[in-house]
Image 1 (cartoon, rainbow, N blue to C red):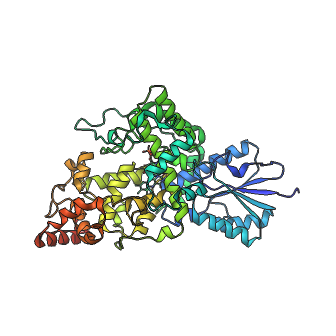
Image 2: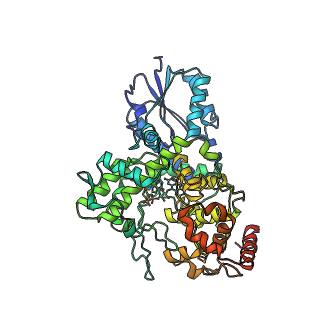
Image 3: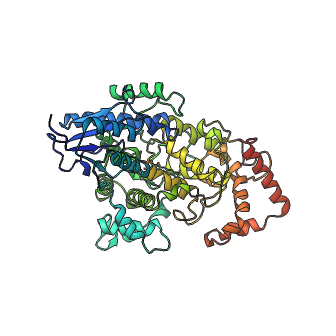
Length: 513
Ligand SMILES: Cc1cc2nc3c(=O)[nH]c(=O)nc-3n(C[C@H](O)[C@H](O)[C@H](O)COP(=O)(O)OP(=O)(O)OC[C@H]3O[C@@H](n4cnc5c(N)ncnc54)[C@H](O)[C@@H]3O)c2cc1C
Ligand code: SF4
């Protein structure tokens, strides 16, 4: 038998034929290693849609590898010899296959990198970790950018990225003369509703995906989420169709309605490409190029295209940089000392709060909720309720098909829960139910009233908003961006403060849900 030179480790979110780990791949001497392991679905209580997303995409990628003539050692979840964790499986396979070296594209998760390193060390095998070229900005470049800056803000990082990569630039100036079109991008739908939104690109599960669905239903029967409507792209071909459909059908309205919500429709004008991007079925450069081309062709206006590019070239790269330059300490942060447990109904959607019920139900049915639902409904409630940020993190990492720790953690723990004390967001994103009322018609169909902060009909968001300000009054008073809110809370008399505290206690006891 010829000696195995490189064993190329491909993780579930590294499904890219052009990844650096394949550089110099010699089919005569190298082989690929992939494994489905239960640990990846149990270290957080991974929802069924999320697990199916990963496993179905991995199996289709395995098929593509074989078709391309790359030898593959693939362990399925139900294989008798499956060791249950990445590290244990890798060790067992290293002993069996005896490669001279392990090769790996830098993993997205800190935990996974440690596991692979430990496995290689245990076998005394050289490990070649290569740059993840998927991203525009390497971790080293981000670290250099962040070094010496007192505070980091996405906006300035994003401008640097636009300049460095020549995206939406006219010479040295931003296209259209301004960097930011956020002010044009904050509309709600109004009473008439969103009208005929183009249906999302949906892909009926093929035989491979159906097998995975059956496996996940059997193996993770008690895990949250449903699979009846699973229609995510799990191949590169489908991911490209999904991208093309977005650019042609939704991008022209993306920016305008980026922050809007509508009952029963999480999809709206969003792109739904996050899972395909995070599993590396799509490259961010082709996503950005497709949107910019639509602008140049006159098919989509600049504010919306800029708004979309900002998400990919700005936010997505920024959160990855924050994650890798702050781990592992970032995981433990709890700047507001929040200690409550996540309400159990986050896992079922059983609540009378119309906005939360819809966001949670859609999350569990599809493994998807749009950004504003994540930030200003589920995230906002958890923040003001005072849920321990690590529990919030575990929930977000479990429920979404696009959930990978590098993207999820800075968004949930940092941007949404303010647990990093202001690194991701310059102030806590807190609001009363009136914000949700402005951005959606949810409140019309809800038993609570967003204008009331106390009493039986009081909207829990509104009560908890005031409770949050009372609880953190001293800390927030040093933040100039919170000055107005702090002034408002200072005006409350003792009786009002007491009534807010009592109603908040009832919410936290579960008497109001
Ligand atoms: C609490 C919380 C948790 C989140 N967890 C994740 C996660 O696990 N994985 C994930 O990819 N995104 C996460 N996001 C960011 C964002 O909500 C999703 O990327 C987006 O909703 C995915 O839907 P879409 O593809 O239709 O996005 P669109 O609204 O169409 O946006 C386009 C793309 O921009 C990128 N993007 C937009 N906003 C962000 C952001 N804040 N951070 C990183 N990328 C962004 C995504 O790749 C997305 O596909 C989270 C946001 C919040 C507030
Ligand atoms: S009243 Fe409050 S709980 Fe009900 S939908 Fe509006 S914001 Fe949500």
